[in-house]
Image (cartoon, rainbow, N blue to C red; front, side):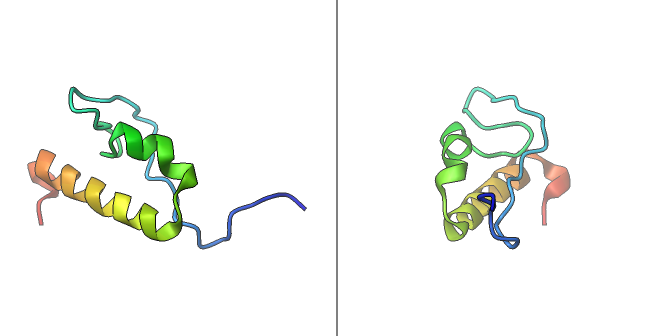
Length: 67
């Protein structure tokens, strides 16, 4: 049997636009460089926290994504 993630595992938000800005924030997924590096080591609750922070960064940096 192969080592696979559980089916409900929180997926990476990567959209294959891997470009870090001057603040080390990815222009594609809005994670910072440390969050990207650590992603595979995080549990699902930590991943959800990363996604929340990335979503806040995305809204802050893009007026079209505002609530």
